[in-house]
Image (cartoon, rainbow, N blue to C red):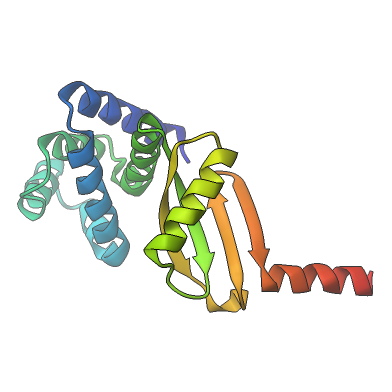
Length: 176
């Protein structure tokens, strides 16, 4: 995570907190992250040196017509400062700040199949205690190579209880 993205996210979070619009901004940033992830051409277009900053901002305002004004102003600032490539990291850092303010942490759970709501709640309750939070906001990533079990990543903390990891450990023990 770059320091620049962190500062922009903190500023946006402060503004959203003061205006009591954290949930709206968070939802807009999640959608924006999906758009950037699925259409990398958008960032290429916005980074094109032949297009002026004003044209870029007008184009983005047309595309992001329903986005909260605080998010749009942040995007415009990133365009002006030639830091629009940082938008995904700004969104990610904002989500972490919002979750922490609500007593929650972001967690990624890798599994061989989609988790049920009951399993998500159980994982959230169990692992939230480990990181001293009230709950976890879980993103489930399906990874068939795990064979079975789950791997939970919360920030820098990783709990790996997958069959693949256990087999790898057994292999190291036997081979030496």
